Image (tube, rainbow, N blue to C red; front, side, top):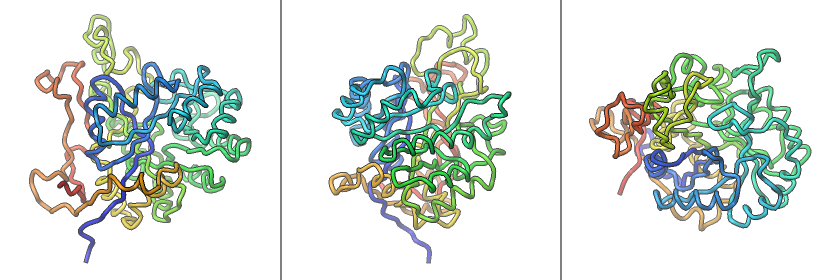
Length: 392
């Protein structure tokens, strides 16, 4: 007889984007809706979060929008950071620093190109027990034979080098997509962990090529790479855990056009709305990001059951990540546990059916063609999940 209910101890998402302005108002409450008690929030805002005070202010704004969720902050690795600021951030409860290679994803124009420049920062982070979160890609370079399909593999030498130089520094290779990345993390010591997104457990290259809603960075790779991600979850390896990389974008930015990306005289070019991505030409053709926060834990349960890893759900969505980051004590775990039940087949109007779109209440009556409308299409929109959260 199949399992009908599962208790999941205080799920934690160790990589989530919650944006700012109206978009943040829309998506921040979705974290708890998706079953997550603790959210580790990325700093690539406009401008990016580069100080302890900025991080504290941002977390306060998120807590005001969604007081039921514990939000944990990060800083953006940039020349603005100093060892003294790392000390202040650690004292303020900021847990990590996120590294973005220049130009590889959303709001990464200020990303880094030379990791050795930041060795004094890494030394301070190691001293203060902060985590280095690495977006594991190098920029595309046709002359060097680098493109989105091998950018992660080319990055792994940087992971090994930083780990050798700072063996006590906790490092997380974010959103791994390849077998070689999985193998690389396994080869490193216990201070190196790895997040895996649910959408990378499902997608391969065919699923995003020409399909903007599934396009993210790093891109999903080949079937064998997806199998490696699934295998390490089945294995229950303690240094691999959930980081959703849930990344909301206005629908207009997932299907870009001259109008939605700021042609002179258009509303998008003059609105000044923080919820739109920066206007102008978008090199990737559409915004990079898949949105999963609102359905996260039921989605994970559905996917893991599909490849025989339902027994690893608690490890994947809670225990492994909490232990790696140090949020696994009794006080951290006592609140936020959830119960999932198997969704009834054929039930209409069930919470197990993924909504087609989420719209900020202020924009419900705005025409769909208006580029300023704040609306987000989630992953698996319109599909049914195999599990749903039991609500009291």
